Image 1 (tube, helix red, strand yellow):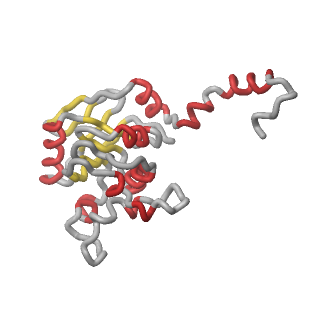
Image 2 (cartoon, rainbow, N blue to C red):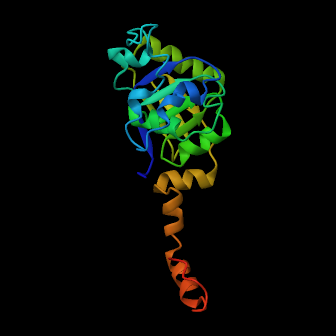
Image 3 (cartoon, rainbow, N blue to C red):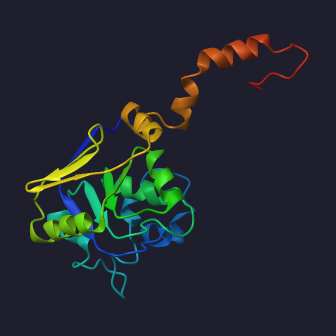
Length: 202
């Protein structure tokens, strides 16, 4: 995955608590075998009216939010079933960071494994950013991972992140990348493995 350092861009606000993974990426799209292309199905049911047509009032359908890079939402974001497709869809739509007061644990972990930056802020800080997005869709916000800050004109907040997760994001290390950091040890182990045992590569 690509390293994550600074995410700078505009916000799209979705001020709802308990946004679950079935709303983020509905189950009917989980049958696809590709890992890309999920952005078009993001919040599929909310983005459409009763006839199935795109709802022009839904935040992601509004032209002024089409280029947002940061999603700001409510508490317990990503709750419900564990599905990697939910953060895949958010990232594929174009978001690089999600800000909320809190996240479901598995969703948070799934985000960090693909380079989508989840940021937990105090509810009052999230509300400030939500109001900023609603008032000025072009307002720029910066999420600085090295400094662990979120800033905008007249606004500065700090967030906490596990040092190991931060290291992974800064260096673009997914699970495979972490494993490949130990190639020399793996090769040495395989070379010392008795020939009578099956090959680990078979």
